[in-house]
Amino acid sequence: MPEQHPDGRELSSYLDGALRVRRTEAIARHVEACPACARELAALRRVSAALASQQEVEPRPGWLPRVREQVAAGARPGSTARIRLRLRLRLAGGIAAVAVGLVGVGLWLVPPPAAPVTFQDEVRQHLVQMSNPLSDQTSYVVEVRYP
Image 1 (cartoon, helix red, strand yellow):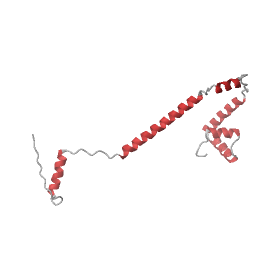
Image 2 (cartoon, rainbow, N blue to C red):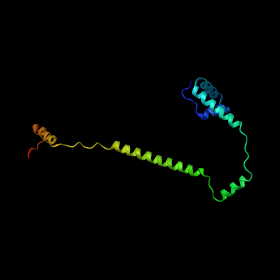
Image 3 (cartoon, rainbow, N blue to C red):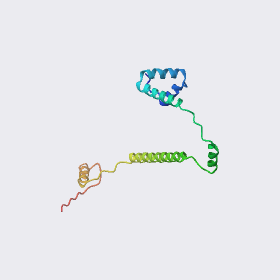
Image 4 (cartoon, rainbow, N blue to C red):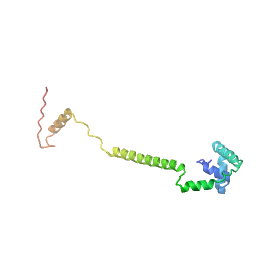
């Protein structure tokens, strides 16, 4: 059985006999071994049979002049508004994804904040430096006042 299932378009092309011989044979073998693809192909066959049994419908008389008048008046199909809305939403989604990605990269590149240094840490640091006087030629005076 092939690693990948044929998609709906490929099964439809298989049903229509529009594939090359080698691909047709490969899909036939796959459908025999794969119950899910066999069910999908059977569903496609039922849809194809139902569509073939439908009668052809003639448009109403005078439909073409009405459409021409509407186009001349500047009418646009309602579906273009949905298409434009989908395109705008995709663009907004893409911009949002890029913005989130940039923020993520920015947060990844920012160095972590320095840990706060307590008074005890400062005293320890000075005591270490005082115990090794050759490391630094300066002298330190540590004055601790308690309330």
